[in-house]
Length: 179
Image 1 (spheres, rainbow, N blue to C red):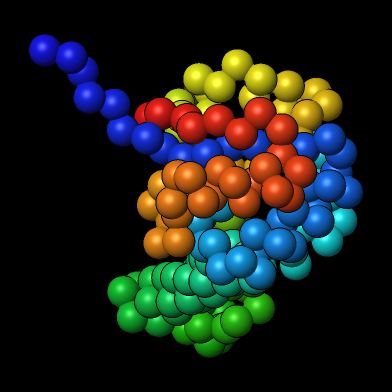
Image 2: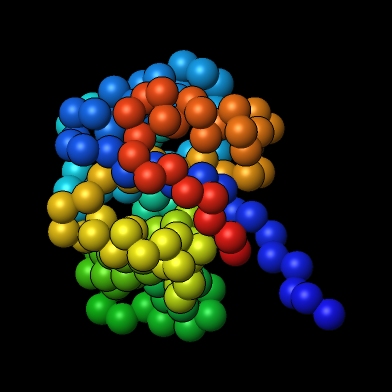
């Protein structure tokens, strides 16, 4: 029995970063939501053209840092004032000054873990395979080629209309990519 393959989307090559940026603006204006641009280097203005908002990674980092701060301070307070309340030389059971190094280190540690793991989760990594890996010309995206892809899962996607739209935008070699 023949194997049924699912389509992933369309991919089109553009001549230069300016053409890709212009196409990205028009794809966004046309109402597509599941699409991506591919370039060997960052293109100024592409985030705005794609309608991308700010990253959530800084918020995850802040959450990790505040969690570390809370755990560090609570651990120092609990061990000195609750679990082992020893009065030595008339010192108080808890003083925030001596808790600073542990609290600081734990804040930095959990903020770093939050940053790394948050980035991995938000970027859906590790991803050892992507359907565009099958497209022979796509390998040039790490060198000197510029691509725009529209996924089949986009509500506005129609194979014929989307292909004609990408060709109208100046896309060369518009290809249907299988998963």
